[in-house]
Length: 173
Image 1 (spheres, rainbow, N blue to C red):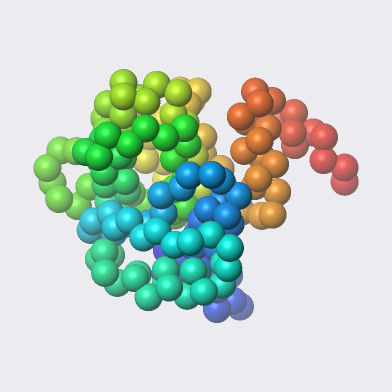
Image 2: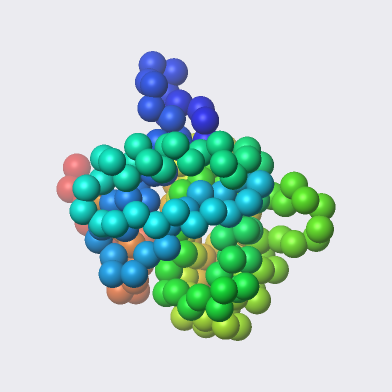
C-alpha cells in the first residue's frame, strides 16, 4: 500500500484507500473507519471535511504496523458483536495472517456471516497484484479492481441486484 499508483506519481495506494474511505464515510449513515497492519485500529472521524480527516488518517499509518492482517477487521466485528450490512476494505489484496495462529479471512468471514447473514464484503483491489484473500464467487463477496469516481454507482448496482457486466455494458463509449 506504500507503492505509488504509477511510476510518475507521488500518490500512494494508501492515500487512495484513505480518500475512498473518507468519501464513503461522508455518504453512509453509520460507518466505522480504521486501518490495519499488524493490528486493526478503529479511527472515527466526524463527517464533513474530508481533507483534514485524510491528513489525520495518514498520521496513524505507522501505529498499526506494516503487516497485512486484514482478517483483524472481521475479527473486531465479531469480538464487538457489530452487525453491519457492508464491510469495505481498501487494500492491495495482499492479506494474510502474519501471526501464525491459524485465523484466516475466509474462516472469520464465514463465522461473521452467522452473526450478520445479510452482510456483504467489498474488497477494493487498489494495486492489481492478482491476489484474492477469499473466494469471491460466493455471492456476498465482491472484488472490485481499481478505483474511480464511479465506485458508488458500482456498489449501488450490486446492491440492487444488477450484474456488473450489465452496468459495464451501459457505459457509453
